[in-house]
Length: 89
Image 1: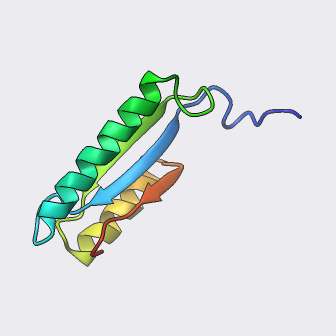
Image 2 (image 1 turned 60 degrees about the vertical axis):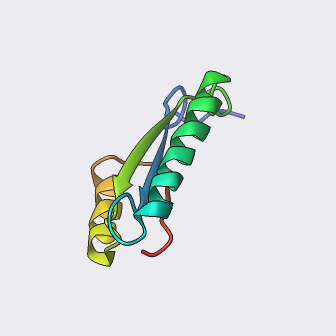
Image 3 (image 1 turned 90 degrees about the vertical axis):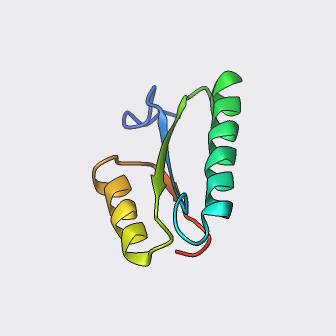
């Protein structure tokens, strides 16, 4: 099977939007730390399917409109491959 030229050799961009400030920051900070730890661990072991993972971490400030803006930024500007969202927003 021929590998896609759009993904071959390119890192995997993972966006994480979490409540690093605001009312749920006590949970969101932990989520950000876990995401960083897991991605660092995966990369230290050779990445995912041999591809490095780049983490794009965004703070939604526990506000829906901020979360929406951050998701838009991750998709349009950073062009992430996947987004994981926070608890509240």
